[in-house]
Length: 457
Ligand code: CAP
Ligand code: MG
Image 1 (cartoon, rainbow, N blue to C red):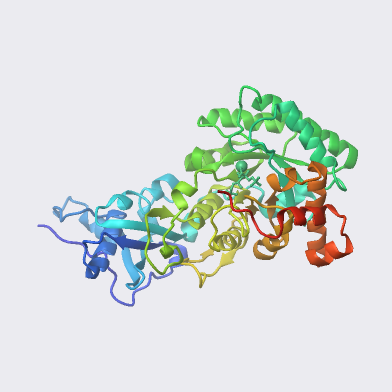
Image 2 (image 1 turned 60 degrees about the horizontal axis):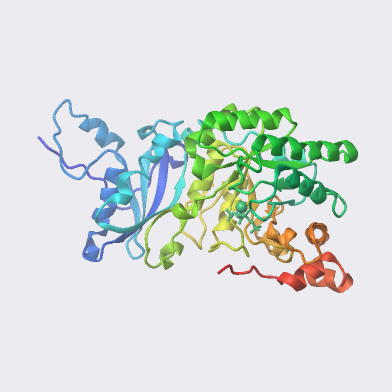
């Protein structure tokens, strides 16, 4: 006997008690041009089947076939928006091993993107239920914990050395000293660039010791904690742990890792086994996964390819336990279609509702600690007011070129960023500030870069 399971929910069905019991995935698909439009619901059902309990054909359904469980645990397509090719799929939480992110992703983000009928497919969002959320560690520090380390409640400012790679370990320590001594001395962090790991001319161990020695020196002098986001990224998790241990031993507070290139298992393991450091998550490579160039990115219109939204990845990294995460930014050099604001709120609040402008599902976090959003990419002091207005005060702002490229030098770059932060805090617009302080470092920065990002060709 063979049975065809039905992966389409009856009209009007919604998953009962979804926030406890169901994973909801919001898909958008683009069929190959030769597939008739009326096949859309069938295609959606095939995605639900392949990503839960089914396959491409009817299979044997005898007493020992497991078909009864397959029917019980099958995912269901519901809330179909035929005109925009959007649909939701509800998966019972117990279809998955509840604490296994890599196993879970093999379902909804598994084989489906390879299916021949598809010209494009996007995972717009995943809404996780309590049963899964409570099985993940989440951030060890979260926003409150990181605030305790930095000791203030303003946006947290820092710089990645540019050139991206070039300085020796000792030269980087010199730069750290200059950044932390500039202005009133309140600049917060220095961060390694993503491709600076342990290179022949700038070795991880020497750099860590040298930069953290400067941080210690500043602490002894001023009492302020300074942050070094020290890049432990490696494809061998044991090496990353050794590096994390060295940071701890040298008195550091944070490690940095590239969470996409190292992978979900690495982030989960480092969260569990690192010696009590906060985790800063850089997201190099994400554009190859998250980027969609079609107008369908906003929900309406066609897709050009296959992607998983950054919003989805950001939720996963919060579950796995990073403390700060790059989320993009308004006025950055990278593509941003308004998603950075939604991501920032999603990772930093306990509940967010679906957004009316982009295809999203919202999320309830059931007390899991929140993550600091990090704004970066072509930012300079002249855009900081917009960044804070859109992403909030609880934010890391990274200015690489936007500090090191100040026409009057690095110290003036820091000063400009600190002036911008102070103006925002005092509720003074940048125009007012410049009028009152025409010779200031911020005035020079704005006359050099303006109030918009530079498009990089
Ligand atoms: C920024 C940066 C960051 C990107 C990452 C860079 O430097 O160091 O890696 O911002 O992008 O190398 O480009 P600038 P995102 O400040 O000089 O641009 O935060 O979007 O992941
Ligand atoms: Mg970088």
